[in-house]
Image (cartoon, rainbow, N blue to C red):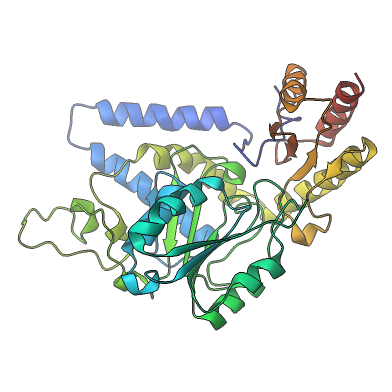
Length: 375
């Protein structure tokens, strides 16, 4: 596949020469890690630090407030279990029904252990995403913490972060945001509006690798948190071996524990550096041009669009319902056979154009999808 008909930026993002860059990073690691010397960590740890630096710059985070995790879910779990009990015990934790399901699975398992009531805001009858008004109505003073999903993975609906965070401050809640489905495409800054924590991954619009999750915690909150997992890298000086003198790091490093897994971060650095060199406004404009065209295509095919039509209220995807007479698995397979990459959740067709996608690729999608649905 050339990439011109790649519509999977809601899943695994691609950029020009990604294979070359990734292979180079892995080959460099293989040489350094296999050398008959003692310089392995001197090579690997700065790569991890570079990954953290690039993420910190992207989201406007202060030094010492971003660290690596294996996944979005792991980042969320680490934050929740590090909180003083006063924030959650006997209170509600608020989340929308269209959050990333993995986060909801986690919350279901932690509710009893941490003593909170899981309050899930439902979708209205026949709706594709949770309405902001419904979320705000449920956000009452009993809510100790709210997790906001900036952009839904099943509709690409985008919430008004400023409005939501302002309400959370009035309620006295901790406010976190999962920015996975939009960061790297739509500008995000942890201070505008100011959130208590943010979780994300290096996939999707960032075009990185799996296992390269990210946790941001506000510096004003970090000193009050006590992560359950701790180890030698949880210290300001990881090379302190005195078991009677453990001192937890004053910054986000307290969320590190044992020997850090550097591979995913190291492998994602080329994508992060590629992204840092781009004109981010141009990336968004390219997406907006192609999503407008995709809307025309699905409308012409008579598909029910579940994504908000106002660009200010959506992420980078267009999602539409395939007719029952065209099972999604068959549609996706037929598109794949023609070199067109998309996916589906049930009968929900998800189309996300990015830097590799071209107008010609959208034309190919239009022709192929029309033929498949008519045939």
